[in-house]
Amino acid sequence: MLLRSICVLLCITVATSVSRAQDPTKVEPRHYKLAFENESVEVVNVHYGPHEKSTLHDHPGGVVVVLTPGHLRFTDENGKTREVFAKAGEARWFPPLKHKVENLGDTAYNAVYIGIKNQASAQNIAPVGEQAGIQIHKGRVSASR
Image (cartoon, rainbow, N blue to C red):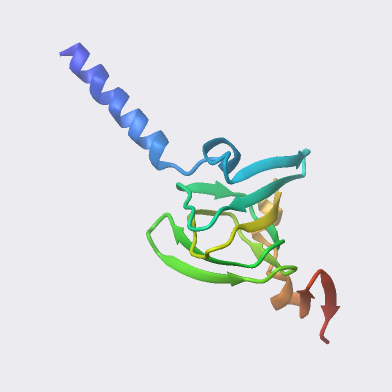
């Protein structure tokens, strides 16, 4: 009986840890590579080949800077999907999130994700474009007032 209880407990522990989202540089090293890290931020290089998919993982709130255009499908932890057409040179704010990614395109997608480690600060930041009317196009920043 004790052995059965231990087995059940072990199965529950494994299932719980697998179902939780994880650090993408650890669970998806093919797609996410740590470029820089300090106590405030982490900078992660993102690469998805054509039609590649990821497993569920999480990111702290941060900014993604798109290097190459892409057509992506994001699926959150509840199964809700969202398609995104990313343009080279644009930057987007994302709050902390857990998701899976699929590159729907026939070409590779590359980006840099700058995650903010202080989540209290990250959750209070509005998307730049919504807050200040700032746009980034082909690496150039412009403000509309």
